[in-house]
Length: 536
Image 1 (cartoon, rainbow, N blue to C red):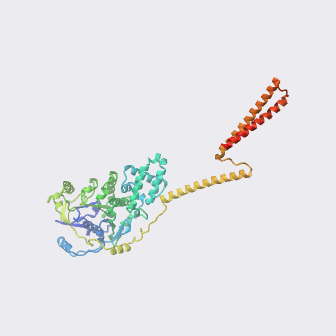
Image 2: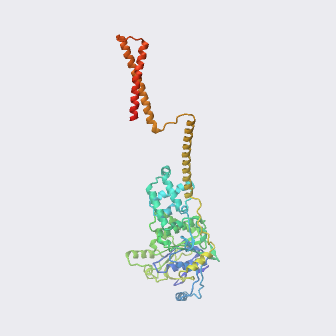
Image 3: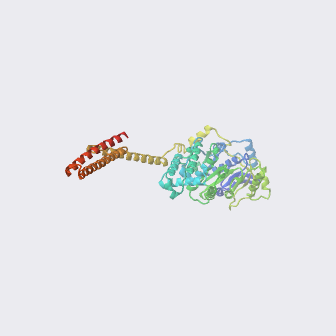
């Protein structure tokens, strides 16, 4: 319940109502406790109070129970008993205006983003990449930015990864080394994301975070995310919520302290956010939590044990509701002790003992005071919801979805030109260019051959015939040599006979007879050479 003077009425203690002061509500909060101790009801009561104050809220619905916040509550024996304890007469049961969302688009309006908007750090966490592989992914994003390419969906990212690998030598000097092993790991991780249904999340139209910050009839609209299927992959769930929180932080302007927050963000199963998360990303989460309150947003972590949250983040959560914890093992006892020490001491009881004694619906409560300091911890009973406790029917959900002002806004997926289409077009263009060049070379060769034939010139011999041509030249050369040798020898013989007196002839007769004899001998040698080469 909300009261302008008393604030957000959440619980009832020994001294009466316990409320969160409106302008301290953006100092974040914690709802902790073991399973079955009443965390979900506490979240619902707190969200209703914000709703009545005109503050919109976002929450993840793990089992469908929070969908009941959309329906009017009803009197029960439990509520009747609480009314008597709290001094409440005729409670004003009422529903909250609700919008249902679903990453998979099955139980609510689709919530999507693009690969580029998520960024390499969050994506690397989602894909389970190591430091080296994350570095390669960052190179892929950098190359895409430098080339002006949008990475909207998984096929865009896959195309960019392949492109960077193919041009690794070109980019190495500027961006660093890109190995086939790292690229293979990224591609395998992309296949796993597809198998988990992540392709429905990475698409357009991208979700507009300002749809979370709307009111209806003076009440803040409750944005309820169906998370039963999403929670089957805790890393996808937590990375998605972290992206959403980061996007809210990056888009909202600074507003300073306000009388009431612009938006309250409930982060259920908060331990998933910090499980196996690199320190660099934990530091980023801490920074977002620390600075987002100046933008009018309050973040309330819901988890089983405060120890699930790093001390650097836990220290920033000023408004605390601690339900019962179990302490059967030394580790659990240590966690209880740590939780007790985070509260301002109440001299009336020992906090560490009370934490293990709390009944369902009871909690240790400490909210920030006007001066920003934590109040003394009190043992209190949580107020009952004014809306329905428990899940609604599929028909009721479908009616609420279709009546929503944003119905149809995100239903149709838009696949505009992005990295995949641009790179594919570039590749096809390069292939066409190569084909044109090959055809031009072939055309020029045919033209030259045709012209040579028209001019009566023998076409250039093919490479295969070069051996035959060379053989012909060798035969002719050998024959010519034989002619010269034979002629020379015949002339010498004739001259010799003339000199010795065995035969008297003129110089002309000697030369003529010698040439005739030499030519005859040479002709026989040429014939033998040609026949020999033909046989070979």
